[in-house]
Image (cartoon, rainbow, N blue to C red; front, side, top):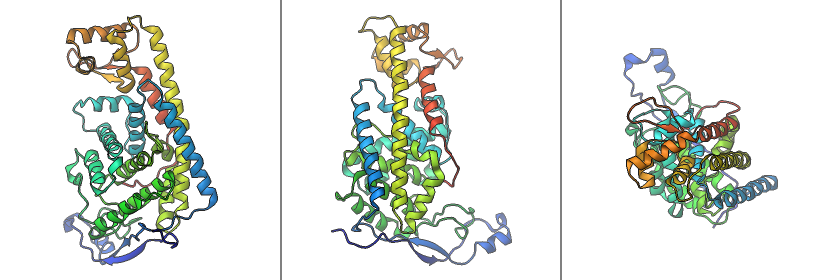
Length: 402
């Protein structure tokens, strides 16, 4: 049963501090600045709290929810496979909030596992985390959150993929200690209890979907339960909530692309939440959703135009493998012969024949310059994705959430 208590601000508690850095790597002055006890947040319980927001905030969230549902229906009803590109675009935007940037071609190459361990590879890992979030939406629990993080950090074992942190973390300041940090999340001894409380709050059915997702996200970011990847996991959690609540059933609404337009406002809203005012994060999420829907609609429109133009450029029987390869390019705008062969379920010779047909039609171009292990790109799709990213470009820079 929800209580009538106003939204509680964070409390604080002191903990002793001893830096793990060797003394010869830290100046005496810096050691002195980071000596003695530090203050870490005490996260209040929200499992049963009454959610009370100004009517204008609720109206904005309702408007954004209507647009999300409409957009989900529009894109979900289309035959062309835009869902994969929307998911990838959302993952790229979420990663860019953490200063992880990469072009559409590099991301598509990383999806083929071209051996790179770059920003693009981390963005692809974020795609896997969001896929896990959507797949686990019907059983949202602590294990589901760990699975999202495990997918995200699979290639970064130093950050304990899929495990709660066992050390103090902080945002901002220096690596020496938490004393000058912009925010110090709760001590690691409290992580599991606060996550259990968050899950109980997330399972409530008396809060409108978008408002609920915004508050769950803000509480998760405040707990900061991992040593890294908290921001990206937390934004994947938004999509799990939207799917679980039935607001988005077919596609991933690129909410992070909306948040990216004003990262200063996003981080300020998280700070307000921690001070006991949940309205700004609901406003930020609602405005981001409205921006995201408009940007996503333009991306889908651009891709539909590209697909229609390709239909005019290719002359082949309707049952030709070329058309299936065209559909693949709308999901995966960079391909190699092995990928084409696997998707078409044909011989290597037939896969190369279909690739040559698309090259002749001007739909794809080879760009690797190799004799073996060659790659082809659908430049028009990549341009549409990069244009989407440019429209979502940040207005201001702020400290990452992890």
